[in-house]
Length: 364
Image 1 (cartoon, rainbow, N blue to C red):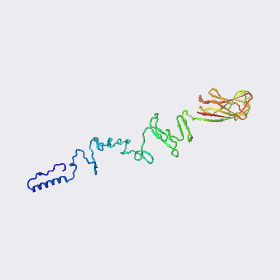
Image 2 (image 1 turned 120 degrees about the horizontal axis):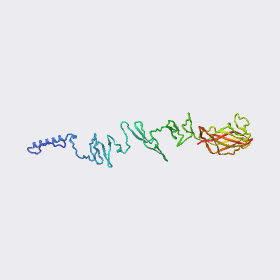
Image 3 (image 1 turned 90 degrees about the vertical axis):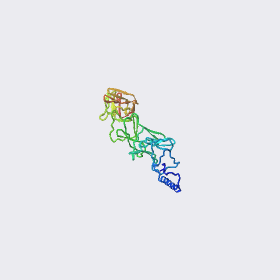
């Protein structure tokens, strides 16, 4: 075979021509027999680089690499750890790692790219979306730090405050019919906070509220509000000092005449609660005299006059407004809410008639 000595005998030509011819024929037959068969792997013993002169090796059923290291650009080799490498003009790039594609070598995001759950990250050019799947047809859960949303003129960063501990869940419950606009989300209690609600620290502003059930305020919680109004008649007055009632008081005590100087105390704002602030009252009535009006607060046994401004004059079918210099906040004393009283002072023989009393209060 090629590479082995050919036994063609002694080609020293002696004797007759016939002897020479026989020797030559025997030698040619030995050479033909040696080179005529195909060269098999056993006939090759390559111990140095084999050049193809730049021509490709074609119709190769496979290339089996053995452990080795090379720094020659263009070399594909298997190292001593049976990892596949390729040498480029920039670096020696390892293509495999522990029997799998070495993703780090490809300069991409590491992760699970195959196996029993082929997780994928794909980009859909038509919709401009990156899509994360944990398995075929199954959306993945993204775990990250902050999420930064980039807008045309600014950004929105969604993060988690350091004060939050444990695992929380934020579920989007509904959106407006157009699918664009405010966000409705699920509260921790299971209720839904609608898109029309503006939530600020310590402040809840409602553009509309429609309750189909009871509203329960726990502890000392209250519903705060701006100016609201109440109205009442002048019934329930108490005569203090001299004088006497004149006329019927069966339905209310809107008409009084004092035989001597004295005062009448009329309870007002009986529907007010602790925490409400009385700001002013308006008295509508009729009098031929000029009664003096004073607003008092009564907390337990302590009665205090509340400073106010007023004309203290009610003309025929007229009115006057008493505005407190400082709004008075009703408190609770001995388990009861403060009382508010209107004191009407008249001289001897004076009379007055009160048709109606209204008041303004708030709860800041």
